[in-house]
Length: 157
Image (cartoon, rainbow, N blue to C red; front, side, top):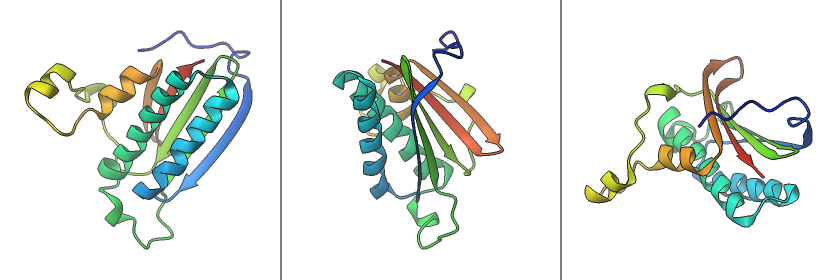
């Protein structure tokens, strides 16, 4: 999953958007639309853009459910830190960072469900990490940074 790190020129920003939204499932639509808009602006194919959109949507839904314990923990609290999403268009890639101040998790030991096992056991949940890892070119996670927990996904154009 870890690609060679891009040089400075490849990471030069050609576009940048930051969203700061409440931790509510109803706001995921705004995030998805921003991913699609940034992808179109960068000239990414619709197929790759849809993959990136789904990976980011899964990441944000996971933050709401697992890091913050669901919407109920954030309702009617204007001081709740919510979600911060950085969308960065670079020369040959889009990089999206999802920040939260929830409990975080151990990314390295996170169990990724095998789709065959998923179907065999007729599970209805649990493909989020599989989708995130398979639909982007690189994914990293940092827990407890000065800006909070950060899941960073990269999709090459």
